[in-house]
Image (cartoon, rainbow, N blue to C red; front, side, top):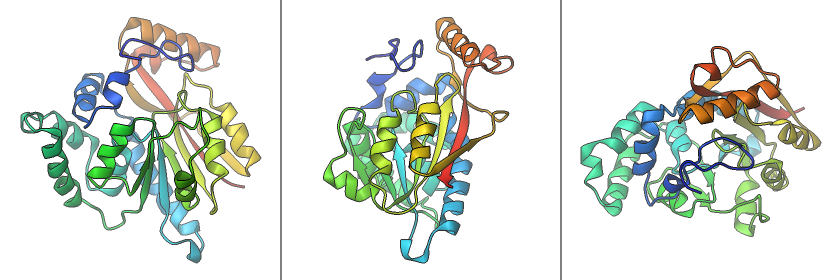
Amino acid sequence: MTRGQTSANTPGKSRFDDIYNEPDPRAYFRRLAPLEYEIPHQAQDVFRRTRADRTAARRDTEGPVTVLDLCCSYGINAALLNHDLTLAELYAHYTSPETQALTTDELVAVDKEFYASRRRADATPVIGLDSADRAVSYALAVGLLDDAYAENLEAHSPGPQLRRAVAGAGLITVTGGIGYITQRTFEALVECARVPVWVCAFVLRTVPYQPVITSLDHYGLVTRTDPSRTYPQRLFTGPAEQRSAIEQILRAGYDPTGLEADGRYYTQLYQSRPA
């Protein structure tokens, strides 16, 4: 799909598939900047706090907490989790005239140094999973991901290497994928886990999350959310997308006043942990 098309799982929502699997993230940031796409920024502190909580809860034999980021794209969540960076700085970096003049190979070399110089002392391993093979290859090449897999678990079972990698993951994160991935992906991953796994998911209010909650409950994970707390995702691409979103919000029993009615998508945070 290309921009302007929609998915059956997220009716009415614009798709940007033409920027999700480029050799590097420059087109991604250029396209999303005018829409003020900000959910990775909203998730940054939440993911850091959740990782700290998961670290405090681990058994001594488990070692460092490994994070599995779903729909990881170019490794943006990993960049914000493990580096002294803001999303605004990433927008500035990837849309600057200096960066635009580079080849992809030159950008990879620059980004290796860029991220290495900002690596936090509390950085932990991150596994990336996304069907966009070139995006995850970039994130792996510049050091944002410790392991990366371009697999679609909605269509296929995880491969043996992914199974081994996921076995040690203690925290699953996702900011932009719910609606394009379903409970099938979560079930496939949780079945691979060999240590207690937590899930931290930001979900658009237009997308039903109950099927995932029900599946995680079968694996002993209890999901909690605060419906009064919302997090902005991005501006709507236009009136049609906004109308569709508001229709879905009303059908779900939510009130769009002051939120979607004002021109943005909003998400809720769902935290799933062992009972």
